[in-house]
Length: 130
Image 1 (cartoon, rainbow, N blue to C red):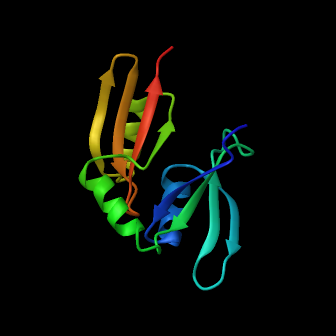
Image 2 (image 1 turned 120 degrees about the horizontal axis):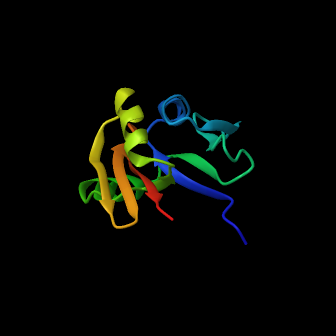
């Protein structure tokens, strides 16, 4: 068994697609109309185009707003992405205007940072040494 798909709820799919591709560097995998304005919209890492897909899922369900607000209020990331060098990625993303809520922090063998994805979520970047 392996993880095939994970999702983040986004306030605006088009804005999310631009952020996740143009800023974070993911690539579009699927863009399928689902009726109305909603789409089945997934992105993948360019390093693993056949790997786990991230669904940019519309935040339309009534439970999503309070859930997302609680996570953001408590500083809990909705997703975590592995990077080779957290300080370097922090610098690159900050240079592109990304707003961080947590600058790089080393906790033993793990370094993390957390940013706002502009679509209602906090996202963590992480690197584990070793």
